[in-house]
Amino acid sequence: MELTVYFFFNLSLLIVLLLLGVLWAGKSKESLSYRAIFIIYLVISLILCFIFTYQIEGINVVFDLRKVPFIIGGLYMGLGPFLAVFIMIVRGFLGIDYGFWMTFLYYGVLAILFWGISPWFLKRSPMQRILFSICVAFLFSFSQTFTMGIWHLPHSSTEVWFAYLVIQPIGVGIISYIIEEIIMTVKLHRRTMKSKRLEAVEQMGAAISHEIRNPLTAAIGFVQLLSNEAISNENHTRYLSIIKSELKSAERVIQDYLNFSNPEFKSVEPLLLKEELEQVVQMLQPLAKRNSVKIVSIFSMGEEIEGDKQKFHQCFVNIMKNAIEAMPKGGILTVEIESTPTTVSILVKDTGSGMTLEQVSRLGEPYYSTKGSKGTGLGIMVVYSIVRAMNGTIHVESNLGKGTTFEFTFPSLSSTLLEAVDDKDTEKELVMNR
Image (cartoon, rainbow, N blue to C red; front, side, top):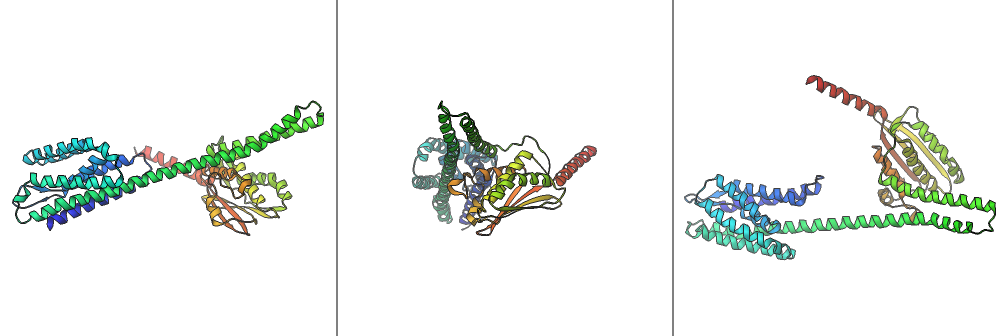
């Protein structure tokens, strides 16, 4: 039973190693493809098979599972010649003897055979590939038992037959099944990602075309009115003003999209939060009065962050405007600044209709809006994009019928400068130590 235990232990290592490779491929952010990781897996598997070998006392025959990764790599990836050369090189280190030449002949023939079969093999269905792999493992295990003269072995020959004719085909079948599941999962993941990208593009196209078509339709209508020679000078001026306003609305939609897709900062400068937020509040006072909303400001002095002034204003104009529109019957909008030694938080609280947990979790998704057909979601997407570009975070809490709180957290300017000074001091110390 010792040979059986060796083989099952080795097979377990090969399966665990394959699963670890799958996890690595799934979590790795590097450019390593599944193919590259699988090649690494095959090489390590062969090394393990050479390490965990078994030799029966009194005979010069070494038993191992190298055939399992060889068959898998030869059929699924057409790597038979490469794996055969690797096996021959490793076997050569053990001595150029009769066993080496048998290995050379055996794996050389199999390498050429698998290299030719692989394209045909990959066109089969998953179940056919699994069954074919098992049959190949069984046939070549059966042939190898004869080339090694196993029938001449003592009482342990039954265990050798079991190890070669049962364990190896089972091992190939299990690994083939896992590989087929991986292939199916990868294809499903890619199909899902592709459908999501297409869905996002469709939503984007529908949202932008809808938002641009409305002002353009109005502008075209007034252009047609301007073609009437009987129009008065007063109406002529008024129509031109409306056309200009509608075209600016279309431009604003395009600019929102550009800000989301590429939120580059034209200039990064220290922002005194109290002054900047007071400007935003002042801009939105007319809208707040029309909606019977009272804006309460709780600002502390001296809090600074680093960012682009224009993008910062755009971010909080969008958020406060949404908050005001969420209180159609009036309410209170509170804007507050809180700080710690390393961060600054800006809280925007409203007493509006609130959102469900699902709505909160979907905020910032491409073209998702809580306003239904009235909104495109571009505004909140721009907000999330700008905050990310400023190394900030957004936390949202909301209760239906009670209101919503947006908490924006940014690194404070004092902590950023302190880190820069520390980095410079560290560099100086390194230079001096050299």
